[in-house]
Amino acid sequence: MADTARGRISVTPVVTIAADDDADSVDAIHHSVNRTLGGKLEYAAADATEKWYYKRTIDVNTGADELISGNFTSGGSIAQTDKVKFLYVENTGTTDGTTSTAADLYLTFDQGEGNTQTDSLIVSAGESFICKPRDSQVGHIYGDTSSGTVRCFVLAIIDDI
Image (tube, rainbow, N blue to C red):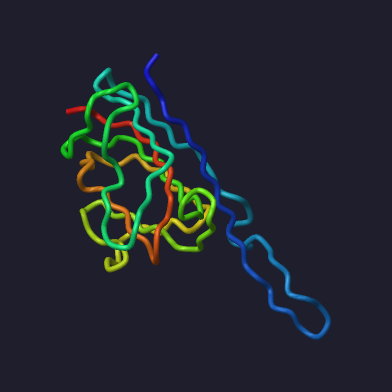
């Protein structure tokens, strides 16, 4: 069997119904959608050149920082041109594993500073992001913060080119 990354996502479209003289405000599922949406996200490694990478202590600061660097879990160096096939990123909501922060993590796939780009992805404190990039190079995936340092957890399957 091939190594596989499995994730699940769900979203509930919530609207707040304003309070009036007779009732408090209340949250409700949007009537046009009328349900929670969700699904799976899976990636199965194509062959033995696709390897796991994970790191629990990636500290991202204001200004662009490479999100992935170092070695594969099984050993061997990751190159800037290796291709990310599956990516999970978690903003732990801390600066160092214990000190809380409300800072957002900005992700870019074009080597840019996320806090200055309008197309960056936002991962708020305590949130996670998963995706299957289409041939994104390791050296193009950057993190940035809205302020200070954010400790991140990153898990990926990367094609060792």
